[in-house]
Length: 359
Image 1: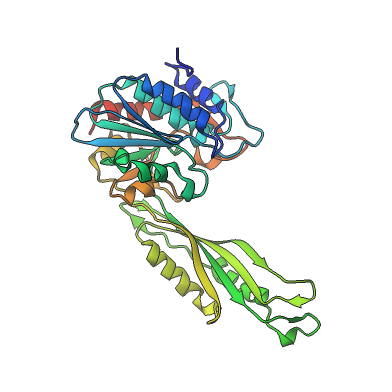
Image 2: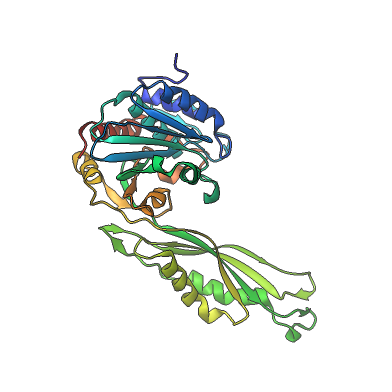
């Protein structure tokens, strides 16, 4: 007998929320999902670490990848599921146990899809990209991730959030000269030098490019500063970490060049700027017939994804990808995170139609 409810998508989501799966602790949920998937005769199932890949092998002309991460952020007084009428509360309800439940229910019930389907349940999305389960799968069995188009079940309130913006973090280190604070004119205060850099960042006017009809909005933010030696020493070094979100009409190299040029007036020859983390943007790919059919047949809103998601992983490998899932992205990771029954049902119905009827 199944350990997870069948036939009631809302109850299935609640059961998944009840399974703790904070990043790096996904073994239990992976075990339960594996048991479910291996019981489905129409699917070929592989497990790599705590990542599960279940595929149909029907020799259809096209293959759709449905992906979702099984991990959550740490709970904030909201561990486990609480149901109030048609609203489900609990860590991961929105991001993204509802998407995982939808994938599992489709895998159970759509046994003869019009397209071949690959279901990817992967670990460690909520932490640094170096730990991401998709990278683990790619390193071991890259062919398991092959497809013609991909949809990730990130919360979008049932809209298509197309592509995603890239993100990079840069560390700017400013150099000064130490001196006693009683005689500061004999030194150069590196912390004071941060003022010009921060002014440039604060007054930055964001680009708002339109890519494939989707309006993106870039951003530039200071997210961390370090500096100081002692209470009576003029500091000779200060660092500010900058996060830049860039639209998919720019490569990472172009985005880095933009930031370097923007901040150049505040930097001296001895100062340094280093990219410490970078994830590329993803173009919308809305011209794909499967994505176009999903939008047209369900009257879906289409908008740009301003954050970064793993659609960039697929886009970088030539697979058009978008985000489509139940749940409100604005409340993900909050103590009051919740999921509405209707959001869940609407997303499931749209994907069931796509799998059943194709493009």
